[in-house]
Length: 175
Image (spheres, rainbow, N blue to C red):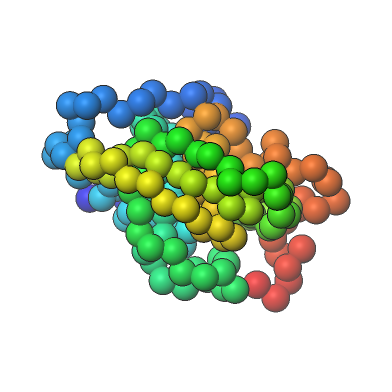
């Protein structure tokens, strides 16, 4: 495992649509190394999740959760550790809720972003096993945020009211 550099907004690699994980990579040493690097990098940066493109790896892989209470989101419920490869998202209704988001690739800033409140996500784990989860609230928000990275979308593009986008220490001086 290695701590990797997190690409920041402005780096063109964050704008690409990531490639599907090839069959040959599931369960491989390369996949295990990637997951280890993502986990170490996410923990060091106190992230709720991280996507492979954020460390310069052009694959449809995200990880999230499993770090206990997150200091960056102190009121959010804990999310189980998840490796999600080649994800598909399916909103369960049209209900959107606005919530504050930050991003390891957009350090120091927060914005209010509308996201689907409930969704079903499916994909494969690091070994290639298929799975499906139905989630809501913060868990659904994190999944949508991380999967956006796989499509070259950073959360500031989803902020609808620019008065609700700014530096974390100005918007939330007590955090």
